[in-house]
Length: 294
Image (cartoon, rainbow, N blue to C red; front, side):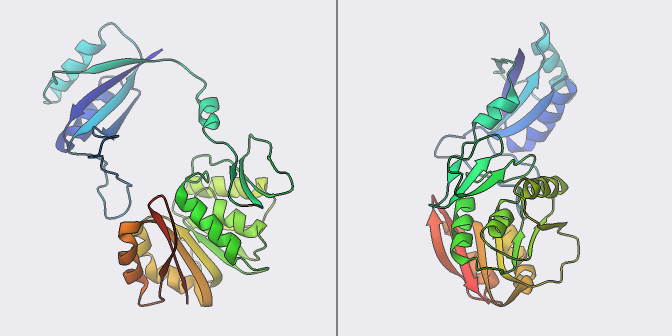
C-alpha cells in the first residue's frame, strides 16, 4: 500500500512544492493541471518554444509516499522549512500495490488500421495472421499506434509507399512508422530521434519485425535524400525542422507531417512554403496530416 498526496498551488510555486515533497521523502512527484477534465484544461506538450517545466496557473502536485503515521506532520514541517505556505487542504489517498507491467499492457490492444494493416502489441497474438502485422513494444519510447496522428501517418504510408522507395521517419519514437514503411515494401529506410531510449526501442522493434532499418541520433550526419519523408512530432519542432526535412526530401519526393492541431495547420504550411507547398490531406479527432511534393 502507498499513499498519494495531492496539493494545489500556482504555477510560480509548483516546482518548489515538488522539490519540498521529494525532500520530505516522496518516491515521486508530478505536476498536473488542476483543471484537467474541465473546459478550462490547458494542454502542454513539452515541445520547443513551450515552458521547460510543465506548470499551470492552477497546478496540482501529486506525490507518492510510503505510509507512515507522521506523514502529514513531516510534509507540513518540510513546507515551512522551504518557506512555502502550508495549504488548508492536503488530500491523501491510498494506492494499492499492483502488477504495473500487466496493467500497462492491458491498456494496449491490437489496432486495425486498414483491411491489411494491424498494430499488434508484442504480448498479443495477431488477430489476422495473414495481415501486415506491426509487432510493437514501445518500451520507453513514444508510439503505440493508438494516437490519431499515428493513424494519419500510417494511412498515408499505406497509400504512398511504392516498391523499393526510400523512406525517412524523422522523430521515429518506437519506430512504428519506419517499420510500417518497410513492411509495406519500402527499400532503404532510416529513422531519426533525439532520444537514445527511443532509438534502442526502435531497433528492438525492427528486429521483432524482421526488418532492416538504420536508426540514428538527430545529431548524427545524414546526407541522404529520400523519396518519402514522414514526421509525426509537434507543431513547434516541425516548424523549426522545415529546412532540415526539406533538405532530406528528394526532388519529386513526398512529405507528410502530423502532430499538428487543426488550428495550427496554417502556421506549419507557412513555415514550409519556401521549400514546398503543403496542404491538409486528412484530419482525425482535431489533428491534421499535412502533405506536399517537392
